[in-house]
Image 1 (cartoon, rainbow, N blue to C red):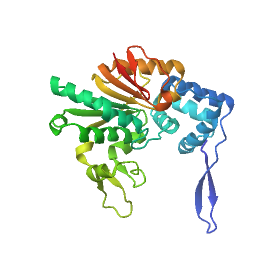
Image 2: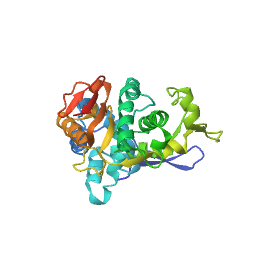
Image 3: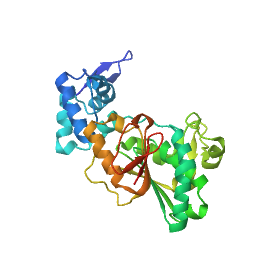
Image 4: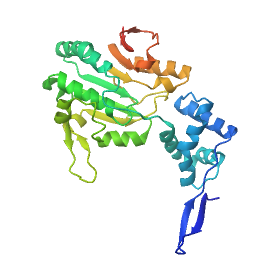
Length: 296
């Protein structure tokens, strides 16, 4: 039955009004809790019931469904599998900003980049970085700013530096690919990098700053799920950022993800987790400061 009510406006014109959707029952919430645990690895407590309601009710209205049970049955049908991506987009947390947890980038310039520069010079090695859970792109772009400024142009050019940005959320990836940010979003970017790596868009009705092509071409954005059993990546990386992702996962899924990330690091490669995710002891990894680990 359609979740829509036809009403008459004062001028007697028929208008469509979306009907309200009832909050999920406990049984309905548990269906979705098990689904996101299985597919995304999320640890959902009872407090996430309102999150499900507030973020997903529009999908019920869009598909003219009246209850969360109806929506669950809808996305379980084979012909509606694509709707699951809208669900994943709705329930993932997408907070990001340039130079978030700046201590990591200070450590990068002072310790990691000098070591990688020596290795690249002596071995003619190409640099490969990965921002896993890149959201709207601020993190991989920040990596690109720092690398472009630090390494010689001869090393960066001709494919010498490539950065992968991946996320399970297709909406944030579209924003990352566009590379358009407001003045407020650029508040944490050093002034010199603001001038060097952004162009001011000419649209007066929608003022924003665009990442310059020389930075955009260093990054490839890809959609995939970090909970997949097999990653569509053949590359080994010298540096992986996966910050503020583990926080949302079930304990066994955290272990799974850490193991996968370590497997995709070169020997001597670096793994950077979120500052709140610093309490891990990881096999084959030596812990440095501020939730930074090196493969040994």
